[in-house]
Amino acid sequence: MMRCFLKDADARQDESEVIRRWVAEIREAAFDAEDTIETFASSEARRRRRRILKSIAEGESSFGIDARNERRRLLRRSYSHVKDEDTVGLMGGMEILVKKLVESSDDRPCSVVAIWGMGGLGKTTLAKKVYHEDRVRRHFECFAWCSVSQQFNLRALVQEILVEFLPPNSKEEREKIEKMSDDEKVKRVYQIQEEKKCLVILDDVWSTEAWDTLRPAFPIPLQKAGKGGSSKIVITTRYKAVALHPDPGAFLYQPMCLSEDESWELLQRRAFLITNDHNATDPTMEEMGTEMARYCGGLPLAVVALGGLLAKNRTLHDWQRIHRNIKLYLMRSGKDKQQDSGVSDVLALSYQDLSYHLKSCFLYLAHFPKDYQIPTKTLFRMWVAEGIVSNEDDGEEYLNELMKGVWFK
Image 1 (cartoon, rainbow, N blue to C red):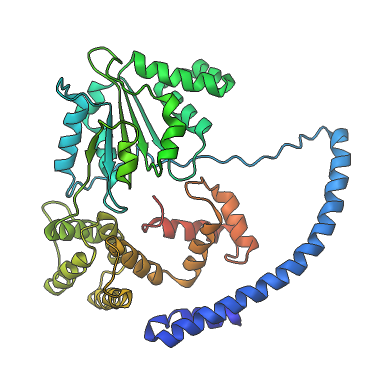
Image 2: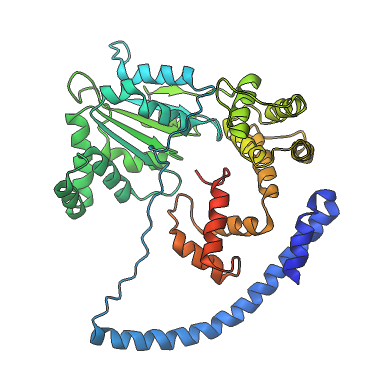
């Protein structure tokens, strides 16, 4: 009954502040009650579990069971092979960065190129465009793309770089890597960058401490590496101090926010899946669309989030509802807004547009750390165990629905 009440009230939250606070208080009370019941149940379960584990441990030697059941935590990188075909607002920056990477300059040789700026500017998308550009692929001999993020495993990251540096069919070499010590892996990555022209993308570096941890794997400066040129490192980060930390002589590039025209163009592509020569926008919808695009503050991530929401709501009535609600979010945020609040506003609106069961599925993902690679089968079973979904097939369907939006990168 409580679930039915919350489901009904959740759909009416935008009607008044009183309802929003009331729903929050009732939900908190429901969670407290659930925690109390689970605490009691878990204490009983622990007693039973200890007895079961004891009997299993006693029987393992008889049956030859290997008791090692360690959960592996893998870094989920921002996959370089997943290409984004939209180039709105990116071409100028891509040309600048490509020239910096492939053209030698005796005046100011540069080992590190850093793309920095606030969240939502499209730093990772720009880095992918550069990474796959034809001149870049011809210029360098070895390539590696790694997501660093806030929580990363140095051993796994160095091994990831080393595997990408090796020839694709070199199975023997890859088996050797598994047997190498951590020091040997770091040293080998260092040596390859000295011997060949390598390009390494370190995406989403959050702190100077993260670079200090990675520093032994990179021979900075890299000017003497390779034949006829040097290896290069490209990092993406939100912070200028982090961008300058690897090399004070690094080339820094800060992407610009989209213009209003660029924001509207990108929104149309995401909302209508239009091509360059086809545009079927209703005049009334275009007027609302251009206004909503302005609300995004020129941040590509906010535009993409809004476009994903509009793509699922194609009627004039739907657009009027979204237009009204996004204005409500902006007024609720007040005038003292952060520079990147456009992303928060649009993501909040996209979240509220999710169905009740998808909200529960999405919020459950907060149990996992950032950049953790979540095994889908395990996730479905956890959802079933928590009563969020009734079976694993429903779980797969709900996850696919979430992946159609902007909730996963």
